[in-house]
Image 1 (cartoon, helix red, strand yellow):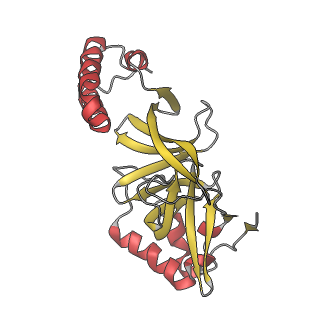
Image 2 (spheres, one colour):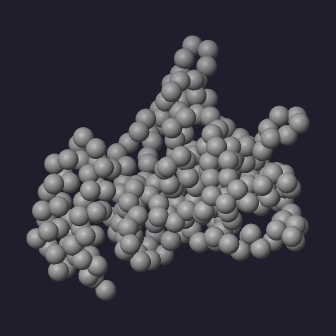
Image 3 (spheres, helix red, strand yellow):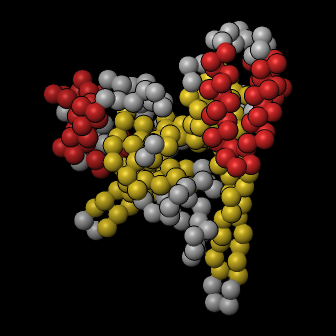
Length: 249
């Protein structure tokens, strides 16, 4: 595989923009529209192919996929995303999330076609597809790592969803292809810098002064999750967060 290293920005007049909004976005923290436009215009001026987002590894697809059972989130095609890479936001980047290999791919246009890059996991902070947010955890101290969807982002906690796929090799008469099927996702709760697997036991430890309420909310969640697990989770954590900010220290 080729390793492509692109030189950093060299536009001093707009350098100040690189130091604004460097914190990881959340569902409640998004760059203002005028700043988004400034970043977008900067990338357009110097050419997005000359920015840090194209510091990565050339991607070669190893699986032949011929139907809708592909290994990408939502669509098997590149769509505009907002990407946070090395603490810098990039807007309208043609990208797609490879769930099976847990990688974000970006497409670099050129006169001769396009090159697909896999972004380096130690530099990827997160990305946004429409109103869906993902964060990347790189070698977390708790052992948790990878790309996670942010299901709930409250003042004290986040709820993260890990999408998973299984692989099936299909051998035909003339060719072999692969199909990928969704598996039950894993859910985690982040409090401060620690991550916990979602369970009633862990919630009781986080809300030691509201055990009765936690049990009640968890019962409701278990009843509702078959129809809409993500929605039931959001409702549960919204209710828990309204009880008190008095989470275990």
